[in-house]
Length: 272
Image (tube, rainbow, N blue to C red; front, side):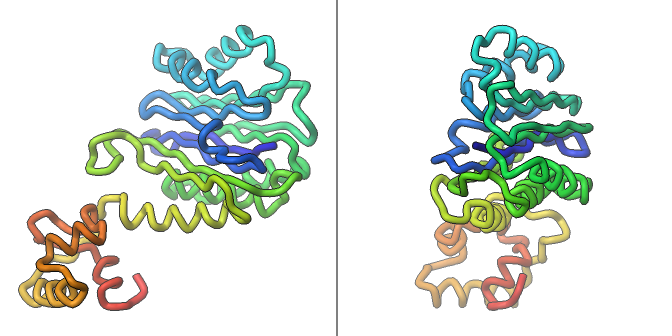
C-alpha cells in the first residue's frame, strides 16, 4: 500500500525518509529518524512501535542489520510487515514479509533502503533507486523527493494516491538551530500528494532554512530604504514588523546587516 525510501546523506550528516501511499496521513505512521542515530520506515501492516524500538537499538550501537533482526525476532506479525532501516554509518537493510500484498519488495545500497507493497510492479523501486543515485551531492531532502517522484511516476501504489511525507534530520538544522529537524512535511489527503510535497519543500527551503553565505546581500542605506518603503506600503510600521509578519526570520539578519537574495527577488517581483 506504500512506497518509501530511507537514507543517509553522502556527507554522513543527515538521515531521512520519504514516503507516499493510498492511505490517509502516511507521514503519521511510517517515518522516523534521529540525527546521529539513523532512520526507519515501517509500513504494510505497519508496526509503529518499530520506530521507537529501532532507533533505541541504533542509539545503543546496534547496526541496522542487528536492529532489524531484533525487531523481527520479537514480532509474531513479522510476515505482514515491511520495513527499511539505515544506521549512523549508512548501513541499510530492508524486509518484506511473505504475507505482504503484491507487488511487494525492496532493495538496498550504500546509505539507502527502498521498499514498497501493493505497487504496480518492481519498476517503482527501480525508478526510485535510479533517481536517488542520479545526483549524490544534492541535499538529502532533494534526493529523497526525486526518488519519491520517480516512484510515483513509475506507477506507485496501484490503488491510487492520497498522501505523502518527507522527514529529514541533521544536527542543529531546525528552526533557529534549536532542534535537529531539517524538514518535516506532510500531505495528508490530496489528489496529487507527491507534487504537492514538492511545492511544500520549496516553501520550506525559503522560510525554514537559513541563508547560505552566497545568498546574503549586504545591506546598504539605499537597499534598506527600498525595503522600508516596501514594508510601509504593505502596512507595516518598520522592517522588523515586516520580517516577522512575512516569516523571513531565517532570511534577514537580526541586525539587518544582510538580506537574502530571494527575499529581494520577492520584493522586486523578480524570479529568485
